[in-house]
Amino acid sequence: MTSYQPQQFASDNYAGACPEAWDAMLAANGGSATAYGEDSWTGQAADCFRTLFDKDCEVFFVFNGTAANSLALASLCQSYHSVICSSAAHVETDECGAPEFFSNGSKLLLAPSPDGKLTPQAIRELATSRSDIHFPKPRVVTITQPTETGQVYSVAEVTAIAALCRELGLRLHMDGARFAHACATLDCTPAEISWQAGVDVLCFGGTKNGMAVGEAVIFFDRALAADFGYRCKQAGQLASKMRFLSAPWVALLESGAWLRNARHGNACAQRLAAQVADLPEIRLLFPVQANGVFLTAPAPVLDELRRRGWRFYTFIGGGARFMFAWDARIERVDELAADLRDACRLCRAVPIDTAAALS
Ligand SMILES: *Cc1c(COP(=O)(O)O)cnc(C)c1O
Image 1 (tube, rainbow, N blue to C red):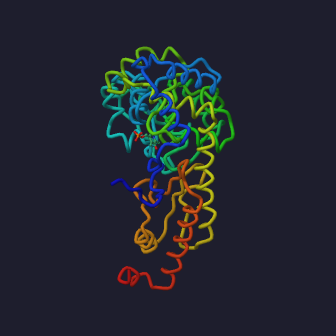
Image 2: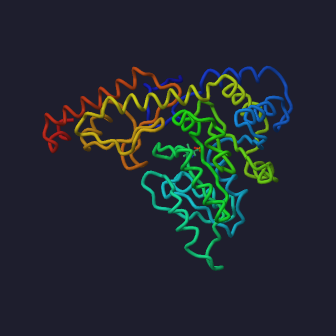
Image 3: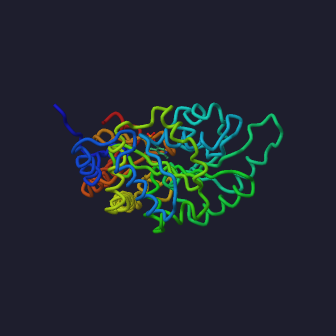
């Protein structure tokens, strides 16, 4: 027997596939088609990205974000190179060393950053800290848009980072696992916040945007994509029935669901934040700029939330994290807000040290 849990906001990956993506997979399942990306959906999906970005880019489809980032970074580096990233970057904290593995040892150089953002100053310090032969040669900067804590780089911020990259001879990679959410927040075109701002390679997340599976790796400089197909194949990332990764992209991009889904997630995050903003026990750890809310509360409040069945992570960003996907139900967001409010009230009524004993 299969069963679903009450909706949770522990991760945007708890969501299923959105109707547009699912229907596209169903439609692509109608018969036989050429394998390994030689089908019509895959070509069409790549064209959809060229239209969306208004750019003749090279596009590849892989299964997940770890592979997308790792293979993209590997394609920009030799093994003796290094990659500058924030200390909170997914490539550093949540990819099990895959970027180093797939690049045969390219080292990640970390800039300390609690909110996950990189600054030109931090990049310059790391990139110019050494120039001798003993140090892994800086080659790439990777930024996450929005960051792991939901912070969005403005077009000006990305442009400034890209300008510094040009000056220092570095390439710029963007981890866009939630790229759509950043576009929704900035209300800019995908081109403005990527290649027009100086991004060389973008990993555009499909999974957190409503697909069942799949990410797109987009090379705005086509020369950088040389042999990338071989990398994908060697890494076990060349889908034999590629149409099931690509057809949902056609649907998402053509229907506008990519942006609708992101706007919905962002709006739910705003809605939760607004409802708990006045609670003295609760502090928002970061400004809410995308589809996540990070908050701190006294331990008994979080315990009470858990007792009421809510699931959330506390190892990202240093507080309780709530993420909202395309399917977040407004009533459920409001339930979470009400439970938070209630938990705070209870913990106010009961002295902190006895709260645990009563629960
Ligand atoms: C989710 C996520 C990824 C991709 O993770 P996978 O689980 O490998 O698909 C990459 N970067 C960031 C910032 C993410 O949040």
